[in-house]
Length: 452
Image 1 (spheres, rainbow, N blue to C red):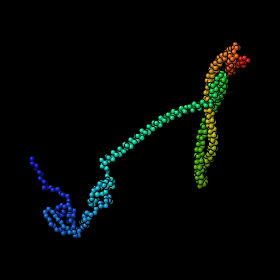
Image 2 (cartoon, one colour):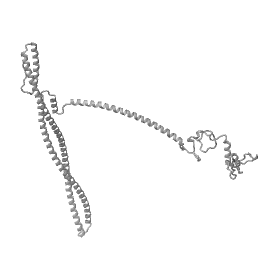
Image 3 (cartoon, rainbow, N blue to C red):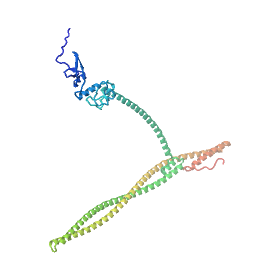
Image 4 (spheres, rainbow, N blue to C red):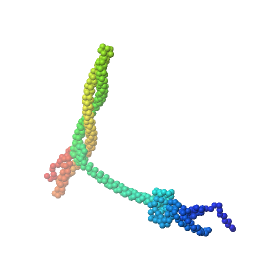
């Protein structure tokens, strides 16, 4: 197998980097390339493969050659990086130095367009993603901590809620107990309540009967109060209706008087204007009359106008006086009406208050009367049952006493007789106590004792 090599293109030859010399050749040596800018004496000795140049420097051809030569001569011993202050210089790099890692800090990277840029360049995508990931993880950690704190707070809130509920239940129980105690110790609201409390605690028919008698007395008083309050309410309603009708009439009259007052004001203003205008015209006519020739028709016409206008002015003045008098009288009437209206409103307000108070008392009296009637009915039934029970007890105790008397008389043993006597005396005391506090008829107290 043979390999065929391609032939080089002799028509195109890539130019090597460097500077072109005056003769057309290219050199990479900057000193050699610039040697043509200086006056020199060249001695060339060489071979076909090398060029040796010995240069004797004389006066430069121009200022640019002098500056370049100076920089080239000193560049190997000093450059602008020797003091380590990179950012201090405002021109492009004038020499070369070793590259440090710190040169690639973002604040040291500069624009490559010949000017420095103070705006930092954006981060690389991978660096930006890495920083974003760290920030995301940080916020996720903060969120987890916040969630834990909220869970803990919810637990504390629930515990406090149950604690408050338990304390509230205990407190409600204590409040209920205190309310019951306060209600039990509270004084009766009405006289009927006090009587009913006594009847509730009564043990004998006489006590129940006394309570019922008190309720009947209260019923009589309540009926009287109800009649009085009803009469007062009716009278107040009549007074209120009369005052309200009077108030309506006076307010209507006041409105008419105020309209008249406005009319008088308008008339007075108009008359005053007419009088002022007429007097001004009268003066003008008077001057014209003085200047007019006696006996002329014009003077006669002016005189007629003057007399007519003067009469109108007098009439307007008279009307003005009447209007002013009417205004003054109307103002007094308006003031009087306003005072009367204020008095009526006060009377109506007081009547409404009295009506409200009497109506409230009437409702309370009627309610109390219903309570009295209910209590009378209830405790009358209780009295009947109590009297029946007491009658049975008294009859039984009287029979027991009669039997004790017979047993005592038939007994011969002194000790047994003494015991029977003791039973008799005890039963007699109970009998006398019940007979004294009972309404049952036919039972009287026993004043004797056995063996006496």
